[in-house]
Image (cartoon, rainbow, N blue to C red; front, side, top):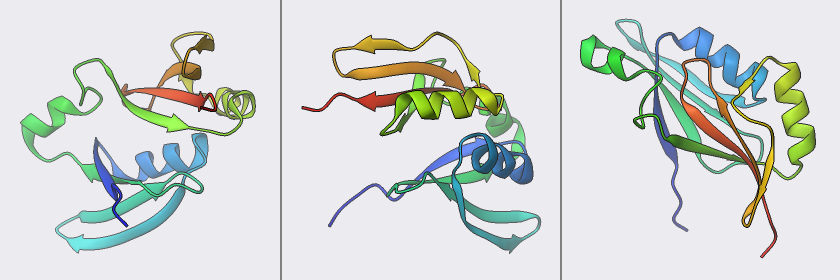
Length: 129
């Protein structure tokens, strides 16, 4: 079996990122291992997901400049859910910032939100094929 295992996400601080992803988005903290010199191997993933996020603390000016804008302002992450209404309500109650009201597209129900650093995500319930 082949699948995408991890996607790196630049963050300013490990603990605040863990708090957002596990609190506001309901992800699970899969790993948090010290690597020396303040560096950690931190992996979070959505319930039932195969692909996790490696929360990588930005080091140096070039990486720090990209925190929150890893995709040039485009939506760069897609969080698929089985129940859009429930997920949207829970995330809104947790203080997640949505840029728009939910909308229906040919592929499903979607709304764009931002993570704690400003990266744009789609919350998405795919329409059955």
